[in-house]
Image (cartoon, rainbow, N blue to C red; front, top):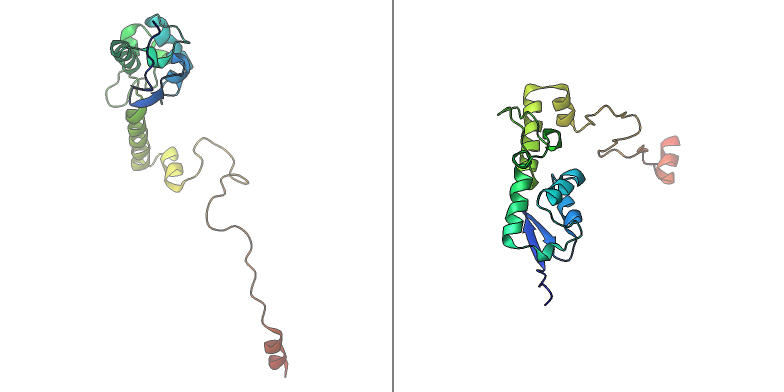
Length: 160
């Protein structure tokens, strides 16, 4: 009897189509890269090509727990995306909404302490040392604005 495939599965706050493969679906979650997705599949002995729709609710909970706290499951600390957190000092892994929130908070902190990177963020300039001569030309000015030419009749009247 063939297994029933769910249409959409929600993992770590991200909707994933049920017919997609597990490995490629985990990569689509913000904060999960290829190496962590591979590690999650190896830890729980899941086939990387397994359809996401065939996962049970307990499998999904295992995957979510592994993604949220990979160090607990033996994943090395260099694989997490927030090492030595400024507030707590511990290694953490953030995904989806939490990752966006912490990124926002980090940028606000840099702006508040007026670090070089914070000032660059504040003015909307590139932060990582790129050249700005020809790139990053955002704004309202596009080209040279010429003066409007006066009508021919007005020029004749001025000469007389």
